[in-house]
Image (cartoon, rainbow, N blue to C red; front, side):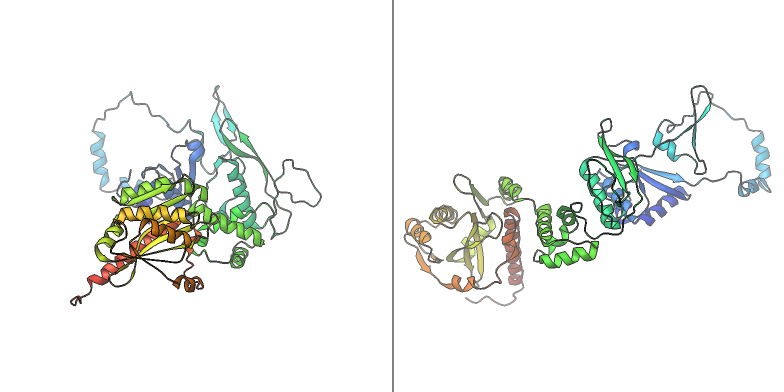
Length: 487
């Protein structure tokens, strides 16, 4: 067992070289067994970098413990090199050994631990043997035809996946995935049919898979791999938007502004298939859901998200109100302390529309630091910008920042009718001023950031990280100031 070697940094050929140096002999084939499976079901080969990456994935996913099996290239013990060892100076040593008595333990029984394992017995058979020969109960030699069972290796590169007779699958989705990959890689037009009916001119390729109740998996029972069709560029319902979206998930998330037309061109260039605009739109949406999760999952995890903020930022305030409308509000403890101790006594209130499927609005409370820069204080996500939501937000803000009745600070906002009434009710002594700058800003497109289009938890996290990064950079810039601060 190796405990001090980092196999994840090796390539396949470096791994082979390491094993051969350790065993002092040339190795022919490598295998590994998936954790939790028997050798019959979980034994997979390691023959290239793609399969080696899958091996590393299983190894480090089980605390770095996994068994590796090796096919050794046999060495002839009766060669001339060994015979030359009894010549010359070694003859005297041999004569001395003739007078030495050896003790033998007659109770020792040598056992072949792999003789009862059908898979290991198949691996140990000589490559020159055309048939597997075993002894029956009467001692007679009988030829046995051992069927080779393969288990579907999902981490394998999609171009190398192909159906093999007796291959086993855990779920029906894996069967369709293999056929889709095989279809696109070779340009075949395959169809799923409940009953295979022969048609004149149809392709001769046929595959039949059924459920194996004793193994609890799907298995390919019959397979005709010969194709009589030409390459096709339209695959109909076989290659769906979900299949394409799984291949482009990472690229779509990194560049969400990519147009549907450009995405369609990329799909046609990479896979050589024709894809409609509607399929590309569904593909883009599917890829975003794979990475960011569906909207239902995000709203279902809001309580966990709030508890995580409180755990990682003790003293912060997170409020969720689910009684009539869905609202979620955040204020971080360090941000609150920064406004109380080092910012001007000015607060601005404004909101922006969210561009997600569920829509909604985000209302923010913004302050001004000593350098007259924007300083975020608190933010809330509501379903609509109205008097009730403004009142709920201002009540919490007054309590957190100790604003009392509005003495000694100013409030800036637009002329939202509901907000003006709430300010008169909760902050009667505040210096409230309205501005028209938001009308000019609404005509500009540079503030349409991608975060507004994302699900709620992803949007809140990007907003939080953006503000933390901005405050930290301002701190570093201030620490580099070497002159005296003006009064």
